[in-house]
Each structure stands twice: as C-alpha cells, then as structure tokens.
Length: 493
Image 1: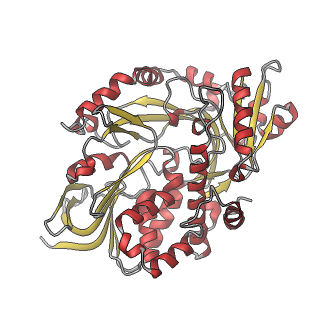
Image 2: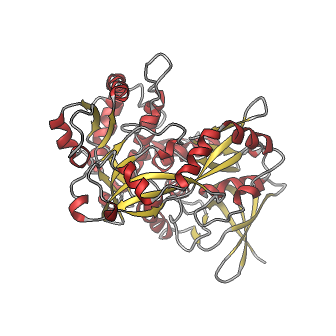
Image 3: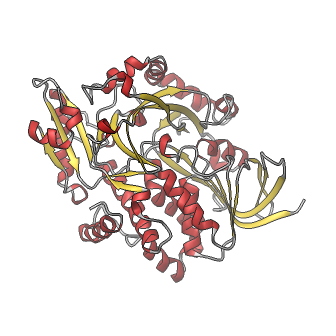
C-alpha cells in the first residue's frame, strides 16, 4: 500500500482544524496539508450551528467568567483574557473577508447585542458590581447598565413583558456583541482550502492508528467508511482537532504529555422556537446565572440565532450525562478512555463532583413542561406548543491530574503538545470556537517555533492578526485601532 506523504495532517473537520489549516496556508502556501474527517462532511459535530451556543464569547454577558469573590468583589481577569482572545478571532476573520477568502460576513457572523439579566436583590447587587469593575477597563468601556423598566422594555421586550413589577431586576448590554454560525464559517474556510494546491480533504475517514516513527514523523491509518479503502498517511506534524474524539487519539499517540488526562462527557439540549411572530421580538443574547452545581456551558440564555441563514430563538442549554465523547460516537467512549495513568484522577473527580453529577441526572429527567418553566424565567409568556427540543453538541470536559496525583475537572480549553512539537491536540470545551484563532496561534508558536522566528512568518502573522505579539488588555490605543477595523469589516458596528 502506497504511503501518502504530507507536511501536515489535520484530524477533524471542525473550526479548530480549519483555522489552523487556513493559518498555515497563509503563512506558507507550499505546505502539503491533508484534513481527515470521520463524517461525510465537515463541521457537523461540535462546530455545527445547532450544536453550540453561537455566542461570540467575549465575556460581555457570560457571568461565569466573572466569579464573585469571598469578600464580595468580582474577579474580571478571565473576562479580560477571553475578550482579548475573541478580538484575535475577529481580526483573523476580517483579514479573510478583506482578501475575499471568506464570503459576505452576514453568512457567518451577525451583530447581536450581548446582555446579562438577573433578578433578586443579591444578584442585582452582583451585576452592578460586575458592571462597575468591567466598565473601568477599556475592553468593556461600552458596557451599559440599567434597572429601568423603560430601558429593559427596549433592550429585551420578550424578557420583561408581563413580568412581576415588584421583582427587582437588572441588565447590562454591549451593543456590538455577535452571533456566529461556526458551521458556516468552517465550511467556507474548508471550501476555499479545497481550491488550493497541496490540500486534500478525506471525508468518511476516521483514524484507526497513529504512531511516531523513529525519524520523528507520524504514521496514521485511515479507513474510508463508504469504500472500505485503507490509506496510510505520514506527516511531520499532526493536529488532533477532533472535538471529543481528540482525547482517545491523543492517548493512542503515546506521547508523555498525554499521561494523566481524562475526559468527562456532558451532553446538551436546546428549546427552539422558529415562529416568526415570536422570533422577531427578540434580538439579543440574554445570559443569566447558572444554577448551583451546573457546569459553565449550562448557564441559561435566551438567544437570537441565525443558522444557515435562518433566524431562530434558542433557550438552554439543558445539560445531560452520556458516556459518548461525540454526538455520533459510541456509548463505550468513556470506558475506552480509562487508562492506568488517568484512573486515579478520574475516580477523584467523580467523587468530588457529586453536585455536578446530581445536577446532570436531574436535567436528564426533566419533562418538556419543566424545561418551559425554566424558560419562563427569561420569557414569562412562553407557551409549550411554540417550542421544540433540539439535541445540542457533545462536550468532553478535561480531567487533569494534580501534583498530588488526584484529579481536577477543568472547564476551559487546553492545548497538549509533544515536546518535539510534532503533534498537538486541543482538549476541552468553553469558550471553544470563539477563541479558535488565538488557540491555533498558540499551536503554531509551540510547534513551529523556528519558522515563526523568520522575518517572513513574523510579517505574515502581523497581516493575519495585527495585534500579534502585543497585549490588547494593556494597550488601549491598539484595541481602538483593531476594534474599529473589525467592527467595520464584519459589519458589527
């Protein structure tokens, strides 16, 4: 059997692999890149529009990014970090639009105000303190706060109509928030890559084998699910961007850096309304506070969505527990990921996260009436018959070994890279796709350090992401220049 030689193999046809492939193609058009995807088309798992929140996660409305401290203050460092990372994605997408690589921005991103909404004295006090802390920083200078019924009727009419007038409520807003159809974005990037020389897309082709040769290059075997044909690949660099499927492949790679990692799968569901007379009354993403014990991706929110060009309202997500690592995966995924090196961390996490386990079980057994009752916290007039249940994507939270040998459940994303830079994997979930550009810059820095030192790659990086190598958190003038361009180019201003 002939071996297909390549410079880069991208495993998974989602937003992460597409972003990395696009960046590498812009940095060095001569690279021979192969993308392998287990399904029969790209962007159909976590990246698909129905499988994620579509929120351009910038920390504007997500209250879990600004936790309350024991002394009543609000910690904003993570919100600043995530906001700056999303600005990197906006810069990269703007470059691709300007070059004609991506189509009209409205096909994948639309201006949708980001709003936080809370009720009750305690949460109103928290939101006001959060606003005061964030407003001080230039990244959030355009944030607005209100408790005014008139303002709220303008900002979120569905949310406040027929609400108890005695209930104390408050909200914040950033007008230039966005809704992103990551599925459409990814399909557009891959479609362009397919027009380029030295790029091959292999669909219906899961990876069955991965191993590193003595010369440092990686051998992979993929099998076409439709034809049964086996293909051998060999590459100098492999990226595992397969969502929940990345952890099992990382374990198969045998690199030392994979030791101790485990995964905790969480499923999700949305309530969906596509009735025009309701959808047209809500034009924002309204985030609330998560229930006690809920994972961060289960923060309740009522969202305007535009998926494949069609408007809808989504509420949720409602979490659940499954042993699958992918929506179209196997019920044996979780059990198959257990190794001697991660057994103790996984047992430690399961023991110390009983609140989360109970929460997930409770979510699974909710009825449609129960879910609509939760929706009425955000939309008092919601009727059961106007909403249907839609399965969301699968997420695998990271279980990471602690120095003491136990385990810790991580709710962010993490890049695991081999020490020789020949392989990298992306694990975890939130904020995920929104920070894809920043995450893939990190991969390039860790896995292509010598090439990145060259003047050619440095100059190109500055073209792709003008703020590269500088801090948007610390440099207000730089942010002003960057944001003015991206809001205009992507039509979010």
